[in-house]
Length: 304
Ligand SMILES: Nc1ncnc2c1ncn2[C@@H]1O[C@H](COP(=O)(O)OP(=O)(O)OP(=O)(O)O)[C@@H](O)[C@H]1O
Ligand SMILES: [Mg+2]
Image (cartoon, rainbow, N blue to C red):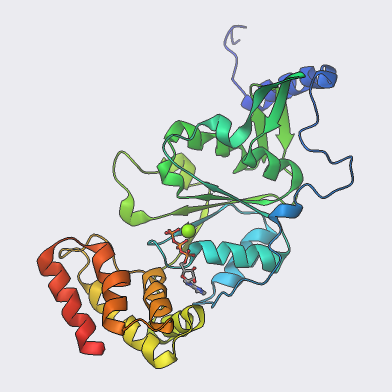
């Protein structure tokens, strides 16, 4: 027989016990969100207008299927290739509110989950963005999650497995995630290092969609749409982008993103000469190396 003092630690049971205790003292706390007033507390998080998103493969259908089973999703891909735009579009398409959190290394678990605040009336609990999303049923998008420290990242664990709960340790409450709640994280595999990577136990809680710069014609269509240049000009910009991407690992740390091509296009559409526009928006930001700048400048003059 197992001795009494050997007890399997169950975070869920612990949190439930604390949750019950919290209910008894609920009057001491203010409601986390003023649902009683009748106003939709997530109104500010609804994506009101259809964001322009040009599907690249079957990512829209895959995401819809993943959402239908509330699978946590990881969007992987280099900077400026459409991850944020995609999640905004999907939130709009599914009619769900979207709460975005830009992660950084100073972020603490309390920044996600919530904290007690002191005000004139005493102590008041304030839900963090993850708690609001879980409680009220939003898509919670943790942008650049690798930037957060690993001990912060683990707070999403109970929400991203079969439990779908969020223990608010300090408050002594267990939030059962709303049926509409889903968690989405973005992740740039190029930036990962031994120090900064997700734990396997975090990674393995997510389905992953790979993103990359779209193929030539689709990227030109996107650049033309977003910047206002003609498709022909956009195609030239994409050619330059492709040339620069070939230099990744040979002097450039990161490829030239769709976002940068759109910047260059926007300047051209405003009347800036293409050479100057490309220098400002494409070449100068990504490298300080004179040889590399020359190589990129000559790629620009090939097309403009
Ligand atoms: N498939 C696409 N459809 C429409 N617009 C796109 C698409 N891909 C990229 N874009 C455009 O590229 C820009 C940059 O994309 P976005 O901000 O979504 O990049 P990201 O992958 O989230 O980058 P980061 O990792 O730096 O946050 C968007 O503002 C949008 O204009
Ligand atoms: Mg983004």
